[in-house]
Length: 228
Image 1: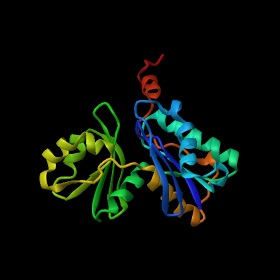
Image 2: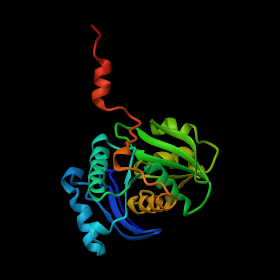
Image 3: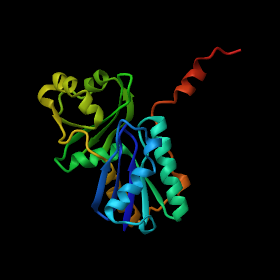
Image 4: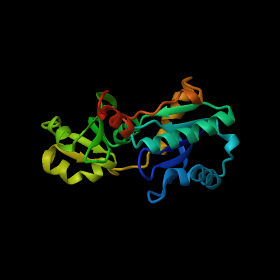
């Protein structure tokens, strides 16, 4: 089974082609160029480099979030369009799940998956031996770290890299940084999607929905308006 995957949860993101559990090619995006400018060009360049035709793809996969509203919308819409045109399924994969899977390849135990939410905040979830132990949330690094004292925790994600010094200063020996701490996710997303597709999970492209956690600025502005 050939899977084409896309991650737009971070500024650069990534895309990948996998044949079942083996990643054929993975490509990092340019964080200095917006997703709408780079897509679908990055995907076409990846396929050409891998020697795979778009018509050969059996399953499409995309990160559902969390991340920027614009990045998620562009990424999901791009993959929905390709999957719909090809008449193939589109599988959504949480970036938290992909990060937890990446960390689990190093060692079992507690994993804190952190994605940059800007404004000094972090999208975060907690996993124990690969199973979600704490629902996704958004909070300051200090608030998140206060809940993790006393238990050895492995940190992974772009926000773990950004707040590395804060994490290590706060938790000391209880904190372990994954290596790499901010991995490309498209390859892992492709492998997870292949597993689900092989197990019979083949959702239609229109069924995919983004995971935002933080409400859009337009919604917050609406709530702040005076009534009457």
